Length: 82
Image (cartoon, rainbow, N blue to C red; front, side, top):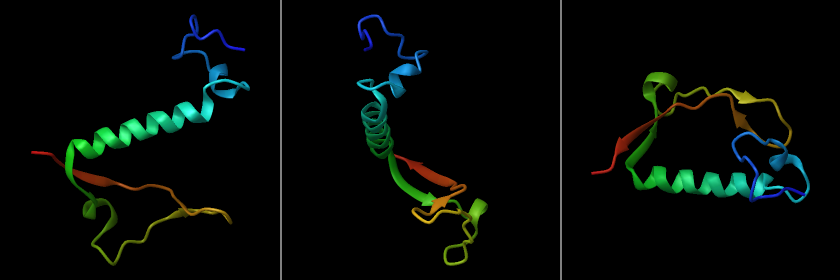
């Protein structure tokens, strides 16, 4: 079991893998915070026409999978909040 009082969260990778470690709950929590802050600081988000072409003619490359379609890349453009 991890001693959280003395653990180095930036270097100790076992915290993410061991039973009772931080792992998935920590990643979900960090992801939620990142998305909330990103949305709070932007007024618009769109797919980049420069990288992917105009709307309606965007050939996205997906990773081969039977379970989930994951994009190999997605370039977004953001408008800063006023």
